[in-house]
Length: 299
Image (cartoon, rainbow, N blue to C red):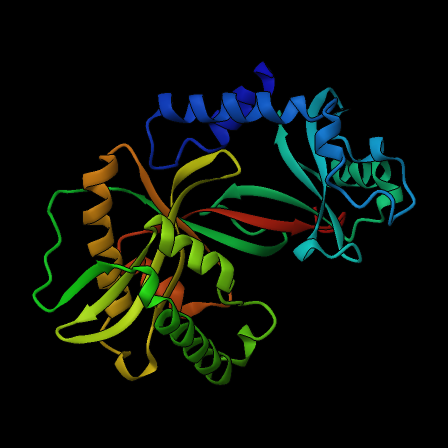
């Protein structure tokens, strides 16, 4: 673990958290991931029967390549067994062409189409970017004020309005930005109701008008911990006034009161979703991490 921990601390030192927090997160992450090399409950979650492979095949594997360690696991894009890939979940060195070729050979029966890694957001792209992670520490100095916009916790009686609003917004987004069709999907209705019940959903109100919805949840993404924005919509009729970024800043005020300044507010964005990228940046978040799909070419 020590070699991987040392390398990953240097790899992600630019994250907007203290070094002690980053050390704690990474140490916990690597320990849990290494345990999956022998965790049968982990491998049991994979479609080993459907792929005619032994269940043990899907245990994580720690590979030693040129004296460096790479902890790898099988994954499926969107849960589709026809689109397998391999995740590098921890390592003691950067990847190169030989590393990618060796990992591909190790997982040859899986027939992975790509190998994925998590890199710092400002690093030059090495492959095809899958997701961007935008984050910022909760900051109460100065407190954001808005005279016309407010947030109100959604309740169960608001579910139908929220559901219809999500449908309307996504139909509009798909029609105006065709590049998002097939890659940008709305929150699942069952998940939406669950988040409303748990108090994770907030209505966005402009004066007396209900104009949108924002959903967030405390969770982990890889080793990163924070409050993640899972969904945010603004009705098409009310776009053009930066309501989405203003609502995110109001949300940060609220979350600061609950969690304090040592917490991150974050969210994942696909690279083609330029409106969400602009919203995140206007709200004070920056691209801190990115998932990249790599092949064994170009190094």
